[in-house]
Image 1 (spheres, rainbow, N blue to C red):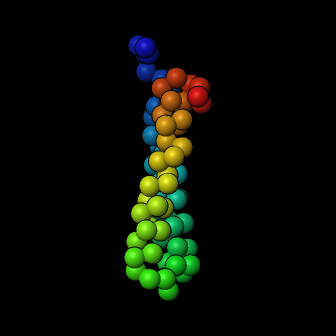
Image 2 (tube, rainbow, N blue to C red; image 1 turned 135 degrees about the vertical axis):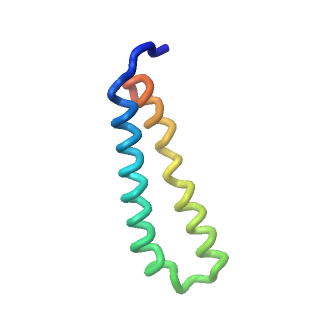
Length: 71
């Protein structure tokens, strides 16, 4: 258990916010042009998947923030 603050937590939070902002901007910029003509239900499914997919690497990232190791 960590007893002292570490630089990884604030840097990790800022990195996560930056990465999510970039990811969101890329999705907002390019996804409508690619899937805009698709049926609404299919668009909804695509946006839900894109909205959840950023969670996949989050576990390892949080482990790194806490321990300094990626696994």
